[in-house]
Image (cartoon, helix red, strand yellow):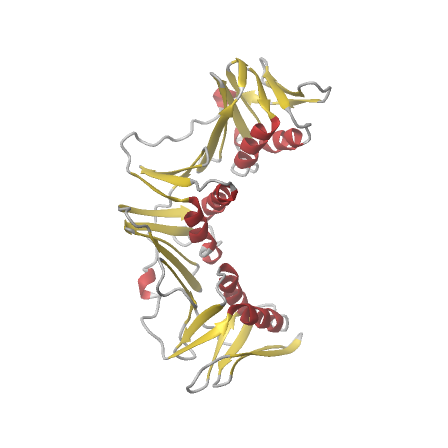
Length: 377
């Protein structure tokens, strides 16, 4: 294989692929990215056998071929190259030379034959597909990713539920202690899909969507569900994931239909007060008490090791006082995910969950709700 390619194009592809390469796998080839040159293009791919990502860019291909080279090493060396064209040459034995055109700088990498790299999954030609803006996918993930369980032994909650019903698309996540649900309406679009996307795939999808969103155009994500896999095409990249085969919890039953007490609070001020008071919370539980009164939302924490903390946020509320304990981090995650000036906090009693919604979320095409279970403090 022999080709010349612009540094910025090679760097972009390798950077997007190396996050999927599995450096801890018992299969050494999975720590590599596959470079495959053919015609007038170079395709870069990576997989861990569950996730796969690939993309291609124009290149001056002198001789076609493929080679697998260590992902992290390749990324570091391409970054260190001067701007301009780079020549990539691979000979028998998979030894790969990367040289800056017009410069003496070069590196040699010990690769593996491209034929040893696993075949990436492909969608069936007749598989159903749908489209949504990359910005919307980024928002769906940003509003929900933090409440995905990190326990890999519980696959049904170590993932995000992605649903599309008619014109309504939603993402739901839960770890058993909290739940986040983001929905949006896409006018003129009708589709049906249900996918359970694992946490690692959610992180990679968010990265791809955010990078696409940062570009000047308004990119679209093409989504295809084929067999056990889902395929996402965005900004010239194709990302595939093996979906989780499990039953997501019945999230509709977790969201309270109504509440006895509802207040509006300034989001930034509430987040600042929670962050400050949580400094004195127990390291083990991170628990704080929220007391809703007619004048203020009082926040307190107590810890045998670090003492007490107190702050309050002015609110407009009429009704009986109520005190409920919560994990402060769960509240802070929700408040950091929304950008409205105010949020609505709804509660019923000391043993009931809290429901948080953006203050201006009720009438628009998008809706968001977070549910946080109480804790005894």
